[in-house]
Image (tube, rainbow, N blue to C red):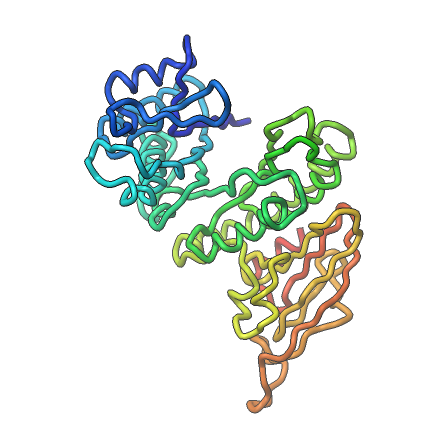
Length: 386
């Protein structure tokens, strides 16, 4: 059993022990300031305000690193969520004298870098380059160009506890795929989403379908109670939910050896673990517009159900390959055309791109649609067999 904790660059102005770090940072000038010279206050709810760490101040960076290291040493934690990092105000004053607009997109990089340094100072990571060792980890939600240099794991922020494509379950997959195209190759979402609002809560069905999505798509399988736990379905609510959680945690574990090969590939080339179809079927206009299914590496295709009250899903099988149903080991009854990498048609004048095929797949709860490409490498074959 391991403990993971939480940090962010905001410090709360409060009485007693809750405000201790705020008072200390204020005394030493470690937070961003207003043009009048006071602490720049940000608030998320009435009566609560926060200061934001000024990461252009070397003293502030060293101080918060020490706070994180002390937290790890006192709790025995193996890692933490490094939340936020995207809220630097454009009208604040910085220690360095730089314009906030010039630092805004660098702030997430600096936040990730200091968390990486804290990880190393706490003894949770050693070595460098290809010889990095240690099993500590932190995960970030904000990012910019150099973030992958420092943050080895990302997460997709606070989705609504809904099915929609704008800020719900579908948006989590879309963010994962788009992030992969932007160099954020190892990422995940909160299983079940996070944000419940009045009149909107997490249903059991949504939670179970999100478990299926995350077991296949995510580098880390991590649940979250959400911001309103009593309004949301939780994995421990019923034996059915616990069994479903266990089944898909095991599925995630079965994919671990295959994912390790993909993580190695990601570290060397930047290729994401979870990929949009267009990465391997760029010539196919349909594949370039599909955002509800994905490839795990090169060889496994998944299309989890992401709509309520439906026991089936429409799956696009891209051209040039033969696709086998992972659960039945049988070929899909409808197959795309084209030569593909296997040379299914040896005529040099044949258009190897071919045409993809849409199939409707039965996908009741517990059986998401998953296919493996014929001719897949041994790691993918082993994962499918497991």
